[in-house]
Length: 58
Image 1: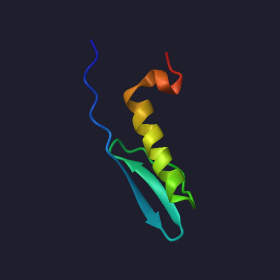
Image 2: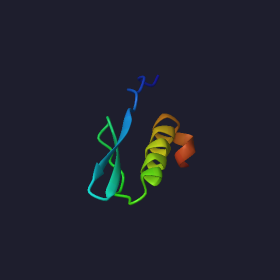
Image 3: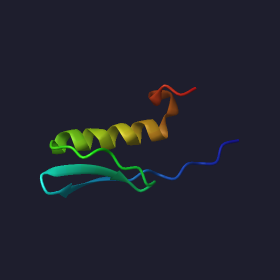
């Protein structure tokens, strides 16, 4: 039986003209000039972290 995974809480932060997505699990996305793209990175991480099949993993 699998242990229940802790929830992934994502945020975006800004450094100069770049935005970064970060997660409570320690994951950090690439620096993006587009804030919208950084938010998309965070959403994609949350989705794949809770549903491994979404990442193409068995």
